[in-house]
Length: 344
Image 1 (cartoon, rainbow, N blue to C red):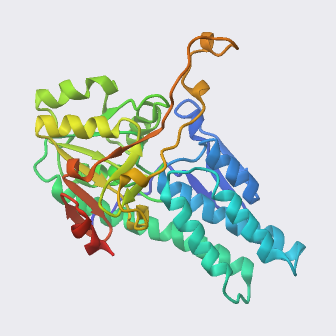
Image 2 (image 1 turned 180 degrees about the vertical axis):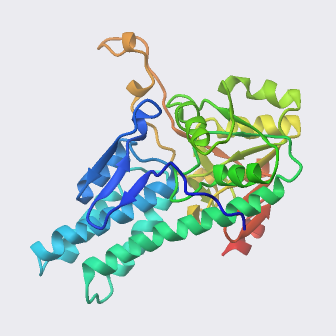
């Protein structure tokens, strides 16, 4: 396995009694960490998109539960379990689409239901293990995905799926990092409107790791594909249905349709914790819509404006448009309900 150097970028830093969160809203101009000491603070960090990316959201939420235990076990010896359970329920309301959030909280809830000799230590250890497992999964997916990119001259990625969005080298960016280490590869990144995660985060993060990247406007993707410059689109995921339908950052579906039209392969990279086995297909995935004011220019924010905005932050890509789904347990080519079952 390729050995990656220590990344310059870390979205989350755990000290044992504090969760330090890199405020991604201020990147790339300002590198600022906020310190959180309770679950309420972590809730705000997730809801406000200081921390983003499905795996990172799950890890942050797990640490939020660990902070809750530190706060309540000593202060409320008889009622701490209920207090921590209430914080878990609150954290679950922070974002609706990223299934890793609910997966991590369910794991913490299961631990909470067991006899615990040292609750603070054991709950913190569970959160740390979730973080460590994501680092390992990123490495595995990076190598497996890089195998598929062998011989590719160029790749296009969308949103941010690297160290800023995960616990390790990333999902889609982990694949790109691994492939880049093996040999020449032209990397393109879309801006990713409206929050510009590609322009603000992805190109900055890859530059920190010494990887040259070419930024394109989202609307240039079709023309880039037609030029023959790329062989693969490589993206992450926030929730994957049992049949392989995938919810990811808004604009992913457009890229999948364009890739099919131009004969470009389409790869989704995500840990199996992103798969929601409880839903049969993508029609059951809740698509988050955020405040229209995040999209509207200032002149249209005044009361009585005739200009509104529709601001979905995810879309759903049908499995039929996906060439390969890369997970830490292996690859599913052209995913279907039957082939996805091999990952369980």
